[in-house]
Length: 533
Image 1 (cartoon, rainbow, N blue to C red):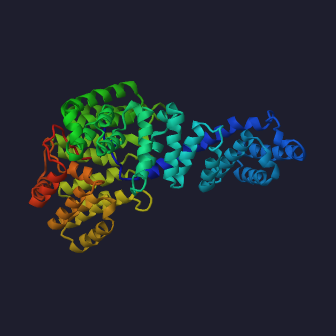
Image 2 (image 1 turned 90 degrees about the vertical axis):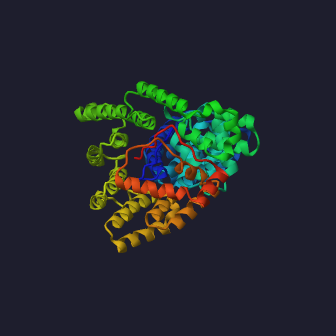
Image 3 (image 1 turned 30 degrees about the vertical axis):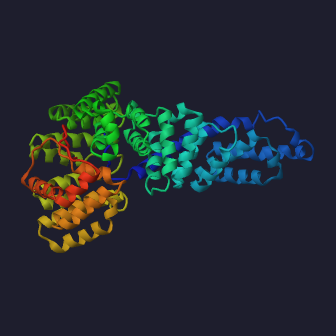
């Protein structure tokens, strides 16, 4: 299943913001549930606490109780000071493990409340060393680790949950898990830890929202199994793979040939696309208030060319939302997903050659909000489509008002600049085009495929070919490069779109590029549509 990347903000920043807001309530609830044990039901004395230390016991519990009350009242500074006092008291070492565990846990909650995320993470790391720590506490540790870029520790916490409480890992926050796995993969230094996490997720029968499989995770595990010549394990993993996109990745990459040859029937993309369509239709039926489910269903419909059905779906959603009153909205996630329904409608119209209607829908969709913020994804997409229509001034105008500093991820900035670059090329404004090209060159690692297209559009065919070849040779970038060179079912094209396609076909037909493709993968005529946003 294609979970599309949204250019307005990075997945990391969005997940982090949502996590902070949701964890605030969860942490306070945890404090309210856990702290009563520190009051009326004081832990029984241990042998080590008898004698002189026993005289001081009420004092330390008075301090801890003061901290508990402060936590419940959201007085995090006061709670932190009381807990620091308790930790420094000689009597603290005489407390039994249950009491010590709660002090460290409360200290973590107090630090989190003060937005001292490093402190919160350090305290929860200590708390989870105690036997009373539960799956919820380890998940809290993973969350705090994500806030301070301690990705290895976050992965270790999630692995612990998987080994001790697999049911809890299977129900854990998909944003946290995806975020941790993604960030662990960025620098290539934590491959072993990441694979351990993915294996723990597989063993826990982990799934995404609506019961969908995280196929990208299983693809990585399959690649590892094949690298170890463990075809049996690869076939076991492959039985969980559902999406056409992941099956395509494996079909066109020679590293997966042993599996593709052994399980040829599972790589029938036409059959897989039909299963995916039916699966998501059931998801939509089972989740009547979820607009996100309809967005994913729309992608499945576009992929198999059911463009009229996409229009019916989009029109129905838009009509229901338009007619609804604020207090009786038909979906629970309109702010996050309505703009993508507009996007689907425009994509279907373009696929049917209804160009003017598609632009009108994109204009309307631009006014919808994306994840509660200005809809920059729609604005950038609209700008790119204006380029294809030969309307560069309108393309630049579509970008007006975008907050460069706060609304865009590094990837999003590359997309915005790419629109500007193509607009200035059409306007024959060489000086502005060169200035934008300099930005794209400097930040090319944020979106190498975009940089590759810019090189080709600017006439640097040698540079574009060299970049594509280097991506094919890079094991971490190969999948994306191979996906780009596939042939899909034809769609209508405007003249400028046809010119761009001819440049691209000439690039991948070069002898050096063809040789690089054949060395690591293959180019196929796929029985699917690739409909651009």
